Image 1 (cartoon, rainbow, N blue to C red):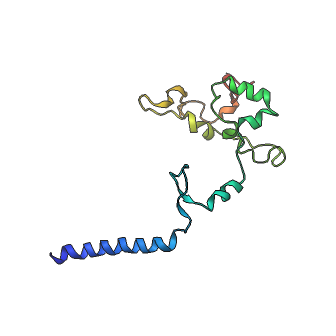
Image 2: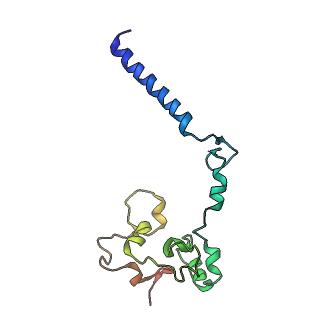
Length: 156
């Protein structure tokens, strides 16, 4: 076999060998197939407790309904029903103790994450009204005119 073929072949074999040797030193001993889970069974066995100890940041709508039942009811009756409260209000972490009030992102950019007009044929966004950002009230935030809990109505 010619040298112009053998040299790259030896380089490739050396690279694969180096990767296999590095894997022995870099991959933890408890990594492997440790039962079925979201990682198709491959994970560090010692990592399970680390994830259990990880603090919860997002609480879900059930947590909000304890104190804000009327807001949750109006949200459930609106087109924004599938959107979780914390998508707009931020993570509830230890609310209402710390922070006492959740910051509300009322920026136009925040609304355009879902409502940007995309000109794709037959997209899943057909059910979500798209806004032409250059034409529709350019210099105003959406929450100035629309109530986020009931977006079809004008804000009062």
